[in-house]
Image (tube, rainbow, N blue to C red; front, side, top):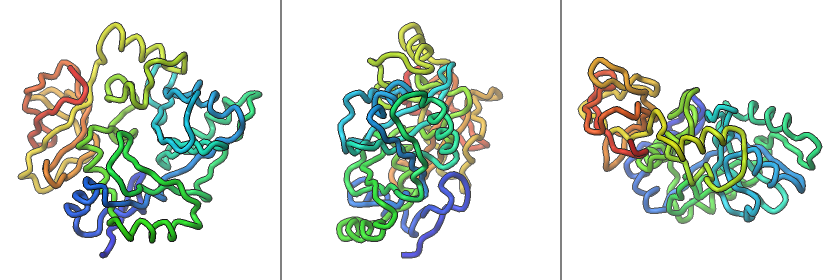
Length: 301
């Protein structure tokens, strides 16, 4: 198999596909695929106070976080907008945060600023450890994952390769879009709040105490609805070139949202995530750079 690599963006340098994206997607659906995600960044948080500290800073409930269990979380700004999105796991001594490379430095600076007198240590461990998508049926956060020392990547890949097919980000993106899982920076903008992204009771725990931005999340959850909502768009398959992320989504002459991740799914065809205004009729025939699109609801109108 000849690998084709991603040439730009946060996944630059990662394998895009091996020339058979449909076959790769089917293997991923069957739980018989693995992927090299070693381009992603890793932050290590150690110290006896780490779980209580991360619990207080993030949207996730981590007080009784079990070792070896992967979960997702966010860090919000004071107004409730999404600043960082990541997955993490704890091994009993250290919590490992996996995040897209463009956001690692900002999150490191924020975490170090919030240490105060607590017994925690934070470091960039990207040169020491890597994450792989392990074989197995997809979890609700995009796993299963395997955190491995970089010196052991080749050995782990050999183990995975005995029972599973290696796939690239094309297959992973198609799986993610079909599952309605947004990715920060692709399916969000500077105004995005968790309520409109379909992550409540997942990356955002709804039964925990105060964290930065929690007031906005709770107020909208209890008293109203978000001004926008995440949808999956089914794009007209006749288009040869799909519109890029960030393209305006139009209802007639009115822009009602923006396009997020675009993927070609082996069964659903061209699909995409998009954020649209809540009052956009669910049966509206939308247009994205001349390509017609129908909505599939992820977040209720």
